[in-house]
Amino acid sequence: MATPKIVLFYVFTPLPDPEAVRLWQLAVCESLGLRGRIIVSPHGVNATVGGDLPDVKRYVRAVRSYGPFKDADIKWSEGAGDDFPRLSVKVRPEIVTFGVPGELKVTQDGILGGGGRLSPDDVHALVADRGEEVVFLDGRNQIEAQIGRFAGAVVSPVQSTRDFVPLIDSGALDHLKDRPLVTYCTGGVRCEVLSALLRNRGFSEVYQLDGGIVRYGERFGDDGLWEGSLYVFDKRMNVDFSDHAAVIGRCSECAEPTSRIANHPDEAGRELAVLCERCRPESS
Image (cartoon, rainbow, N blue to C red; front, side):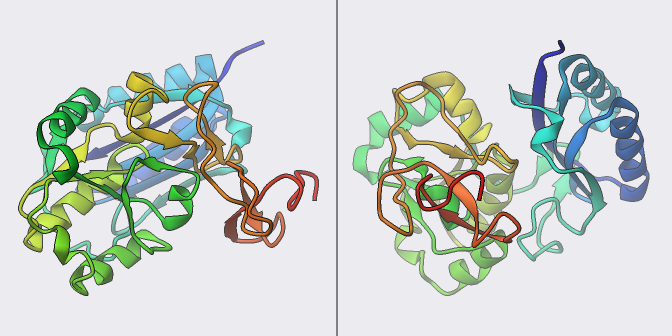
């Protein structure tokens, strides 16, 4: 039996014909029986797909055969195509919808004006050097941070990435403008954009966790600065980096500790909530 795998990657690079890239990605995935979600825009591509290991390997080879994507940082995890309900390949103005497609400047080298890249080890070195002066800024939606985040991180009251620009422009984060700010998200793509938007608005020392929480978890697991579980965008809902991951989430119904996020109010619901097994059984 083939081993199921999921890969996720993104590339910021100018794509003069996003529709052609969409059709190519759709054809490759359909031919290999892969499912997942791929977004193509004039700024690049953002993809998460899954299936049997041999087919996923063929997909990765196809991706790397296209010049602008040849150096893509491919992140692998356990899972399968059936972790996704279907295959979705779409063209959109942005590969992450912050609502400011005209503000982002992208070249073959990526986003212009983004925050400095820090590897997981670089993050530890910065914290060792600057101590409590360093601020971690969660670049994800609020619900994701409820079950896992960096210790002491600033979690913004956002329901989607579209909420970040109005929040920043409101002055709500101005007290952080002169602090060393480490932005982070699941795989790094949201912080590529967020760090640039912050710098455009006068934040003086902005960094991004290169490779996101995924790469940090691979390096330090639950023995570093990360606490809890990682929310993921498929039916698994969350993953842990070790067998001793902290449980920091609280059920929205009964307040019991839990790392479970479920569709709410039912399986067909579009909203998400932190809900324990007792308050939202898997079979309900």
